[in-house]
Every structure is written in C-alpha cells, then in structure tokens.
Length: 109
Image 1 (cartoon, one colour):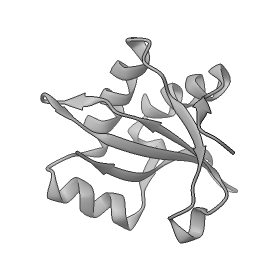
Image 2 (cartoon, one colour):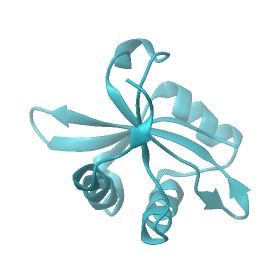
Image 3 (tube, one colour):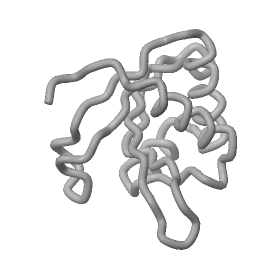
C-alpha cells in the first residue's frame, strides 16, 4: 500500500485519543526517542492536536520496520515542539479490557 492521506474518521480518532494522554502508550523505541529529545506523551499529544487543528495532513502507510507492527496501518505527521519538527509514527491498537489506544511507534527530529 502506498502512502495516502488518512481517512477523516481515523484523524478524528487520533485527535480524540490525543486529548486523553492516559489512552496513549509508546513502544520501547519511542520511549527512548522521547528520553533522548526531552519529549513527553503529553507534549506529543498537544502537538498532534495542534497539527490536526491547523489542517495539516495525516499520512497513512503500512509499517514495515517495527517487528510487532509489520503490515499494520501507521499514521505519520511532523508536528513542531518548541520550534523543532518531530517525525511521529502512530498506530491505533485495541486492548480487550480498556478499548482503543494510540501507540507512539517513533518520535524523533
């Protein structure tokens, strides 16, 4: 599947999940990215909402790198945090107990 603009329903879901950082998790890789660049889940969530509010495009692709996510849809955006463009890859996952959550797969300049 080639990269394309994400469906508006997915963009709304990403926005909704980003509005509640308790519904956001990160992969170990993204966790280390955040530590290295002094980023937080809350800061990334705010940047995601600003990106969407500004009408910027959320790109949909299929992951081919993260082992446990190969073949699953991912969503890409490049919001700015404190003037720094951040390359952000997200997934939408489901937990049988708590429902949908956003998974930050990668977050780095």
